[in-house]
Image (tube, rainbow, N blue to C red; front, side):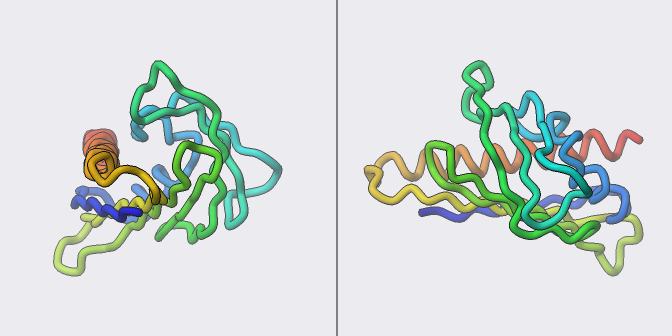
Length: 149
């Protein structure tokens, strides 16, 4: 198992960036390897909502549908989703925090935990590094999208 966290300050209000980043329709714009997203079921996003992402962050040419279930969804503040049908069960948390002494700047954190027990210890550091790289790329894309207007 591994647990990696990336964070970045983005010069946009918490409300604005969270509204954008927590809308699954926007995921392909900043999530690494996500080609499309389909929300399952009716009603607004919330805990127990499911989305199907056509994705493969490691190799977008080999994307496949993966079902993600939201286990925490507090609009404007945090979302946590997990998938069990991928190669390795994983959970990602994305949070948005106001920075007290910096108006209209938001600290965005992405934390990814993956269950990779049983894999050779030589392989685990590479997978952890790849997950950290994906988190960092998502933050960079989100920053570029949101700060340009």
